[in-house]
Length: 433
Image (tube, rainbow, N blue to C red):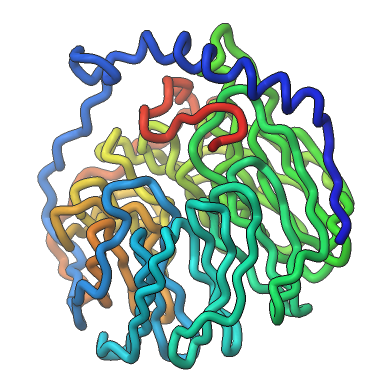
């Protein structure tokens, strides 16, 4: 096994200082005490539905995240949906009907995943374990200890390896058949970081991962050695909270370009092969982004949704009627964008101008996982374990809500800076333990 460590002395020093800095930094956050939340969620705006949601089926096969901020998402493969919960239950369902095919109670505290390939699915736990289960009946194939909580989706590569980014900014490559560690590389996280990790993006010749502190790296999948490293956003600000510049949003690869967003930092485009930053635009984001041939779409840290140009990041429109509703990353379905919120609502936006054109409430619990789109179907996994399959109904001619704001030409996609302090449940100390 190859293991690399960068800056180990800095890591040890930061672990000692982190608790004091966290206490000092959080004392001024009103929602830690009895003061009123200064950023209350926006009330839902009036809406004349242009497009409706049709429910194909709905079930509650698991207990979900139990109100913890985890990265448990639905995975779809060969007509089956797989979901897991924080208590260790894994369930396979028929994607077309919601019929349960099998379920297994493992007793593990799942926190990230699953990903599925062939006859194997992989999940990470809060105890720093990576577990492989059989897609046939859920029996355990192997288990490996990684040393830190997994709050991203482990990725099964086409080369027979599984790649994992853990909460302490360690990156692992393991044999997918046996779970044996092949390499590990450790990056020292900053003193104070968001509670979360970006999921690795797999390309033909590298693994691209966003790290705490605003760095984007590309690693060789065979040995974990860095191919390139680039700082997308440098920490800045007068306090440790203001200096958080994590890349928790999953990198998005479109052709030769990687698009990425950092909290308290920038939206950026990076050359996939050379690691050179092609452009930057001020925009704080951690929920995530999505892209297609027509543009970039981002949920920012104030829960505004942006449409931007891929060529230079210039803003097309911004939708601010859902501010502070703790939106998911956007998902694409044709000419529409989907986001979920903390009250269990799904919102539908027109991707051309950001207008709100549809809405439905799936459950009273929050939706943290990005909606999963496959063909013309939408699969949504809510925090209470509700899992539903939806389609979009016929479009009406009723007038909808006003179009989203169009940013003035000279301004960037974050003309209004999103540099506020992070919510309390997303902040953690050095090492993210």
